[in-house]
Every structure is written in structure tokens, then in C-alpha cells.
Length: 229
Length: 221
Image (tube, rainbow over all chains, first blue to last red; front, side, top):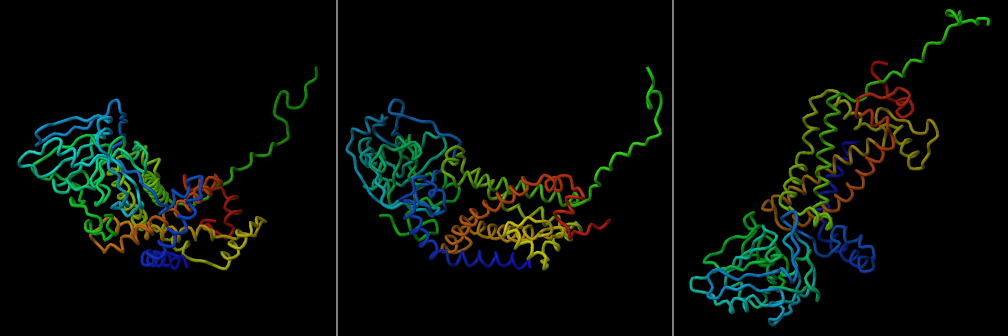
């Protein structure tokens, strides 16, 4: 009898895995409706409760404000520069509204990001001969990311200052993060502090741990999510 | 001043001998207790790391995602090991077969438990009551499902993506269920010091065994 219960659990588990796509769709719809009217935020703790998940690879991340934030642009450029938060704000801003897709599966629909086009900063610095890629570093002290020069010049790649039409909060990588709209969200490095033009792609933090370097949504990491762009 | 009996020497009266301390009876062997203890620590580690990966506030507090993931994966993978190693113990194997066997009295126990009936004799139980039997079987099955779905998520190249999405779905929701059930398991233990003593020291008081597990035939009785 006890053995039958154990086997029953195993069977249920297998059925759950097989029926997940249907069940998940139904639950997401139901939970989404409840979450909209939930003042406690407890539904956010349920699986598939929707929304962003906080991932950090270090124990604590320093807080930076307009007073002490700086973004350096260096490497194979003619005019290395350091931007303060105010200097970034003074540049032309671009607003992009796309879905955010995490490689672990969660997706947040239609999320506005706003900031300076990366290509504008690269043009201002004057990319030198032999440049092939960009390496991004972060003031959490550990995270890094990479893009090819061609990817970095896309007009949906931003140095983002605002998210959901509000200044970027610390938990979301504020005051400044990278935003790479067409790729899985691990490419959009939080707490961005350095942009270095390099002669080859240096894999970033998660890429050293096996994630794809070219992280197009729906065409990488063995996943087939709907593209975000 | 006249002396009273007992003033100068012992009286003829006899004092009754102090009542014998209730003899304790053996419930769990050392091997069984070590299996329980190591499993419990592994499960707590696994649940704690799961919370740090999953609850946003804790994730923000702890960070160190790669380390937490590694601890979670390995503690989870090791959970069945103490029990499997404990199978060399004859006492543990005997208890497993007791947990596996359901009798007519278990149905009565369940009905009374569901009706919150606490009258004496309403909850007949052997060494393990029906609730403990169901818990044991359920948690064993749940751990195996978590292990299977966890491995599908860990080794991403193993199966097509649909499987992995399904595995994530089952892993997340079953984790929630296990959290609730484990809380119940610990609440039951907290509510019954003698049951806890049984698992900690290996022996329980005879009156406790008689009232909680009346059908338990203690071997050396």
C-alpha cells in the first residue's frame, strides 16, 4: 500500500511533466487575474506568479547614485571617456518596449526600457581599427558580459537608465544597466560600470559556465521561446 | 519534653519504595536515528537554498547565485543516500515494511483523525500510525519526483526543451507542496516531546507507547 502511494506520486510527477504546458497556461491565466487584485503581493511568491526574479552572482552589491556613479568607455577607442549619471541623462534617450525573456523560463511582457543607444556612446568614443567586440563589466565586482561589435551597434541595444518609466532601481541593476532587447536577459548586465572595446569576444560570467555567447531569444541555449524582437 | 516515635531511631513503619521510573522501551536504533538526522540536515539545506533561489527578498539578501545553486543541487542529490545506506540495518528494513503495510485499524485511525476525534481508543495504531505511513510514502515519492525533475533541469542537454519546461513546472509546484507538508511534519514533532525524544534518544516511555501506539507489540515485552 505504501509502495503503491510512492509509485502513485511518481506517476503523478510524470503526468505533471507531460501535462505542464496545458496546466501552466491555465494557471498563469488564473494567477495573473488574482495577482492583479492582490494587495499583499503573496501571489508573487507562487510559482509562475509572474514578474521579475532577482538574480545576483555576488553576496552584496554596492549602491551607487548620481554622486558616485561612473561609466567608463575604453579599450580600442580613440577617445576614452567616463560618463557620470547626469552626463548620460543629458544624451538623447531612446525608449523600447519589448518582452523580457529569461533563459530560466520566466517572461515579463511589454516592459519599457529607456536610455542611451550603445552605438551612440561607441560613435562618441570613436571605435579604433581591429575592434571586433565589446566587454561589459559591472560594479558588483564579478559580473561581465560581451557582444560582438555588430550586435552592439544594433539600435535596440541600450545603456538603460529607466525601466517601466521609472529610474532604474538598485534591484533591477540601477542606476545603469545594459539592455539587449533581442537576447536572453542575462546579456542585459545589471550595475553596468565599464564598456571596453576589444579585438575578440571574451565570454561573460554565465557564458564561462556554459550559457551561449550569442543569446538570441528563441535561437540559443536549446530554447524555442518566441523572439522578443 | 517527651520523645516521639522516630525521634531517636527508625520506627516500625515502612515507607513505600519510590515508584519505579517508567521503564523506557526502545523505538529506534542508532542506525535509524542517524539516517533520520542526516536526511533531515540535507533536506533543511536543500529547502533553505531553494528559498534563497526563489524568494526575491532572500535572493536579494544572499546573492552568490552560483554557489547557492551548487549547494542546492548537491544537497538535493544526496537526500536519498542516507536511507539507501541505512538499508543494511535490519531494524530499518523492518520499520520500512511496517510503514508499507496498511491494516484495517489504519482506516479507523484516519477516519478519527479527519473527524478530530480524540476519545481513547479511537485511534488504533501499531508502531507507526496511519498518518505517519502516508507521510512516509508521500514524501518518498515526492523526493524521487523532485530528484527526477531536478536532474532534467540540471543537465539541460539531456532532454528536449518541452520536457525541461514541464520539469520546472512540476519542480516548482511540488516544492511548494513539500514545504507545506514538511512544516506539518515538524509541527507534529514539536507538539509531541516524547515522540521527539524517541527520535533523539532512541527510546520512549511505556505509557506514551501504550496510548499513542496501542497495537505496537514491543519485541522484548
